[in-house]
Length: 116
Image (cartoon, rainbow, N blue to C red; front, side, top):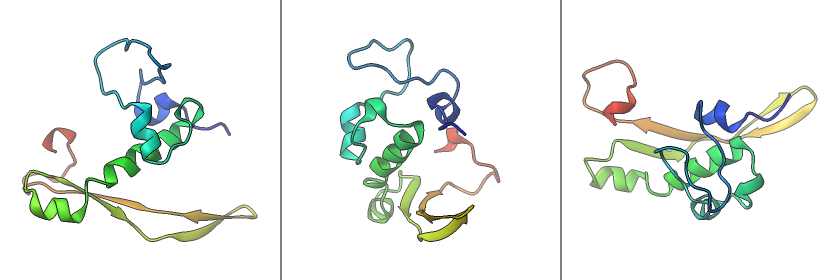
């Protein structure tokens, strides 16, 4: 199977822009330097999953337990989970986890991005 695409991971209309390209519409822009700081060596040729991991790794550096405890306006907390191993066919895979906790006043049982 093929690697998931940028649009499959980030949604319809998501695309990888060339350096210096104008954005086709308003939206979130994450510069390659931020992705590289998070560990993505070559964003221009990286997979959509690589971009997703780099975005999460970058966010995890700020969304810490310490910042969560001292900033009552922070609603998200990211931390390392526990590594494990699985077999996929005859190949062993290491499975690393990043946990994302979403905190809000308890008024609704569903996750709504507008609440964070």
